Amino acid sequence: MAKTALRNSLTMLAVMSSIILTTMSVTGSPKPQPIVISSTHYQAQKSSQASLNGKALFQREHCAVCHSIDSKGGCLAPPLDGIGAHRNQEFILARITDTAAEVELFNRLHPSGELLQHPRLRPDHAHLITTFLLTLPEPADGFRIGAHQKSQTEKSNPKEAIARQAEPAEPQISAEDIRRGREEFISHGCISCHSVNGLGGRFAPPLDGESGRRERPFVEERITNAQFFTKEFPDEYGERGLVMPPTDVSSKDIKQITDFIMSLPEIKSEHSDIQ
Image 1: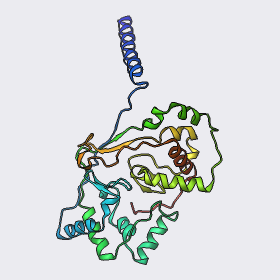
Image 2: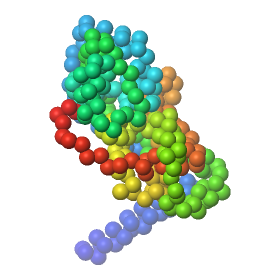
Image 3: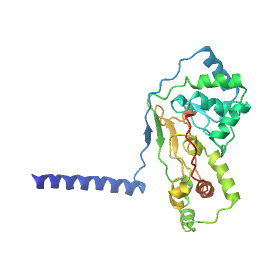
Image 4: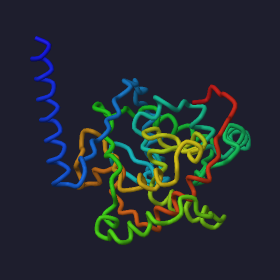
């Protein structure tokens, strides 16, 4: 009985090894599998006249240039579907209201500031937009995040990739390198999934203090063409079905973004009940 079980296990191992080797011989490496972020079953607030007015203001203020809802909108800031599951009313008002009290509250909670300064609105407009945002449900099937892969630039130019690998593991980083990396980090929409100092997306690991956890080559190899989708439309390109469109990040972009990430300190902030 034991010999039969062992033989079956070895046979299964051989079959799995054959499948992996076959996949690698065709593609060069196993195809990365997407990550699915399940719904938290957040119960959004019910729609009201105030929320409808807030929706109209959301459109008038062009918030969708950076944010997306239901896979429609920009990719420079986190998607807003189900925002009430992880941000409460007090936090949102502190983020978007132009009064001195709200600005002071937000600066106290986030003294290092934001990567991309958020526009602020007068209190009545901020309240209406907040009311609208809290009515937004999560996608019923959650979110699907495409795994990080090699960029098309690196695939099509292997000599450039080899040259980059030959660079020193810890190059000298200037303030200008960090500034440019910060700009690239913003322009490529990295903040849609990652957070810095508690601000940004919730779909990927926070990057504060990343240099204390990862070596530079590890970070560089993962700054690629990750994609972010609502699970309902995993491969939809028409009508802006993507929340974060694929990007072909060049070696220069990779270096600059890595410079910025490796400069981020570990953030130790006081506990706050504002989510």
